[in-house]
Image 1 (cartoon, rainbow, N blue to C red):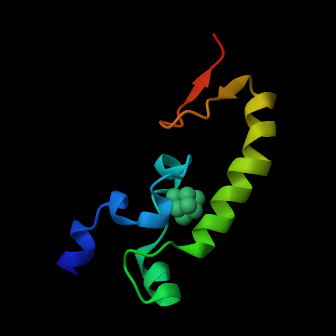
Image 2 (image 1 turned 60 degrees about the vertical axis):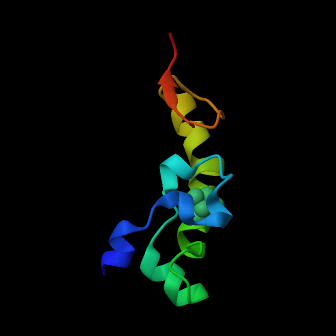
Length: 81
Ligand code: SF4
């Protein structure tokens, strides 16, 4: 249990370059272990959902409410000025 608690999102190699890492946080460690047998694996279920949400659902919502989305590494959402 302590091993899971001490795990950092940067230790999930497959997610290291992901532009939405800050939003997703690599998903669920239990799912990653069940899918890959590795606590440092990617949660494929969370990944599919986050990619769909970020790519298809979020842009029209942000647009509707007057927000813009930066695609920089920090992946910070900001209001139009
Ligand atoms: S969206 Fe996928 S690749 Fe990106 S951090 Fe989440 S699980 Fe990793």
